[in-house]
Length: 275
Image (cartoon, rainbow, N blue to C red):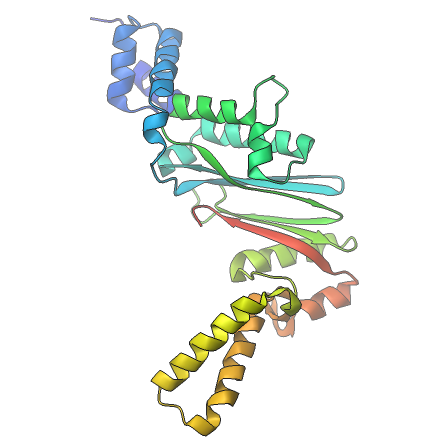
């Protein structure tokens, strides 16, 4: 029987996020040699990467970093919360966001193809993560913004890393307001900055739904047009950041808060794990 203890199995499981049975098998095959067992799990994991391609990655983390006038953020996904809260997965997120800050690559495709300081592409590092952690790992979103930056990361559970992240690009420096607006976006999930940014086809679709709903509710024909337009207006306000009631002072809109601070929102990105 291989010379290892239950503590060795626990240590290997925590280091690799592999299943307990897989850890025992690796230690048996490695005759109790911990480092060799880690390598065996990586090799076996690499062989199984393609088998994991169709799996759902609804867990993970959002990680972000701001340096000078640049802010970056990425969403790194995995299959289970067990892996999501593990040190190795969190360290992988930190490593990737550092490279994103250095490369300032604004699309997932270009980021995956970029080369890190260790000489490996991001995609190859992700593939190694798949192997080592024993789950499908993928980058779902990346964002890069410039100018004064507001940042907020939110934990939906105290034992998990941040699941929601917001980056806000401001027209002029206003650190406290930048964070407040980022928190507001995290909570209220607007889709656009201005009402003018809402696509016409989206508004027309909402108008169609509003009309069908009003007819289904039996609203009088004479009032139909007014009811529909009122609902469309409400929809536009709901998805437009500047027209939303500010989270910390519902008597004011986000635009009023920004105006009072002498700044404006140029752009924002909101990531929520699995969405």
